Length: 167
Image (cartoon, rainbow, N blue to C red; front, side, top):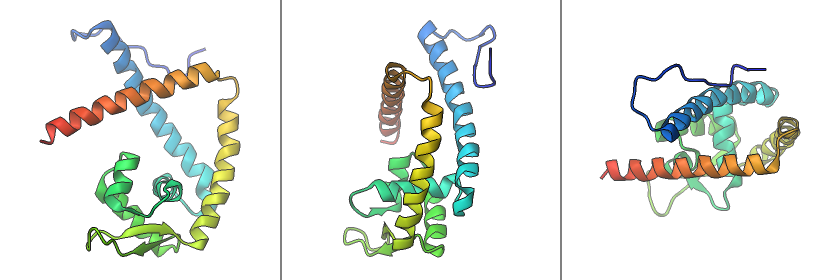
C-alpha cells in the first residue's frame, strides 16, 4: 500500500546518476516527513503551550551540558539564528528559559532552563517517548541505524559544502 510519504519520480529530464536520483527521492521524502513531524509535534505538545519550533529550541538547551547562545542553538538545530532568537525570546517571556551573561560575547547572552522550563521539558520528554515508541513499532533496528547513518553523512556533506561556499 502506498502512502503520501512515498515518492516516485516521473521520468527525469535531468542527467542524474542513479544514486543521485535516489538521493533526490530521499530528500523529497525528508521534506514531506519534516512537514508531518512538525504538524504531529505541534499536536503532541499543544497541551504544554508549546509549538514544534519552541520545543526544538527548548530541547537544544535542555540537552546541552552548558548554557548556549542563540548562534550555538541555531547551529545545533540546523535553523537560522534569527528564527532561533525569535523562539528564545518567546521562551524567555514564558518563563521557560533565562538569559545569562556571556563572557565570550557581551551581545550574545547564554540561555539555560528555568525550574519551570526543566519541569515542562521533562513532561514533554515523557510524552515524546510514548509517541516515539509507537512510531518505532515494526521498524527494525538495522533499518533505523542505516537511516540515521545515511542522513548524518548527507548532513555532513551539506555542512562541508556550506562551509566552503561561505569562504
